[in-house]
Amino acid sequence: DAMVIQNPRYQVTQFGKPVTLSCSQTLNHNVMYWYQQKSSQAPKLLFHYYDKDFNNEADTPDNFQSRRPNTSFCFLDIRSPGLGDAAMYLCATSRRTTTNEKLFFGSGTQLSVL
Amino acid sequence: TQLLEQSPQFLSIQEGENLTVYCNSSSVFSSLQWYRQEPGEGPVLLVTVVTGGEVKKLKRLTFQFGDARKDSSLHITAAQPGDTGLYLCAGALVDSSYKLIFGSGTRLLVRP
Image (cartoon, rainbow over all chains, first blue to last red; front, side, top):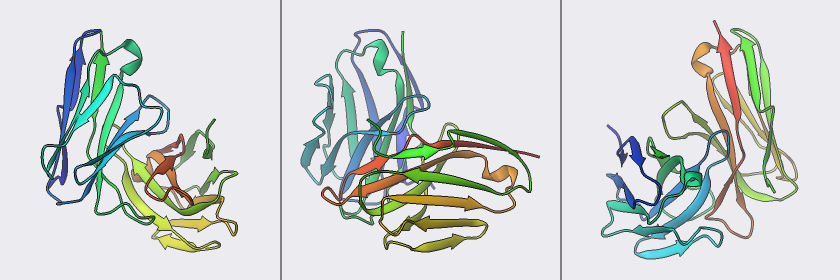
């Protein structure tokens, strides 16, 4: 059974039209991450939550926001998607934020911007 | 600037051949993880190496962490079509343990 679930698998939005991607987990993990992965590139960390504490990466554009209303759910909001935001968005979880922690990834949401 | 360089970027081999994928950096890592990602799916952890010089085996896969903890390699013996996928190394920097830095990946195709 899937432990980190991302919806939808494919999302098409229009240039400038706000879009929300969702992630849920059944692992009861403390930490949830959002990564952006463009074609043939490494996954890039956008931000993460440790419980309710939000940690933004310095180079994450303001256009990207996140919400974590409870332990199980985390949302990625893109306020005004540009063509350059087309990518696979990966949600991941871990129990803690220590060195050897295993990340559990969802299947990702492939975002297209028209 | 890519902190973790993976080579080769693409590899197409025949079933039964051996191969090695490299992950190199000028930075020191507390630990290094290897993931495999199949098309349309998220990465799945294969192994974590922590100690310099450490070697771990997972069936036909052998992972090694460099003595200086700046590099790692993945060797696959007698590759199978089921090994096809994107192999990603990811390192935890010494000064930022929670943040994994991913390499850009090696895309492996094993032909039957």
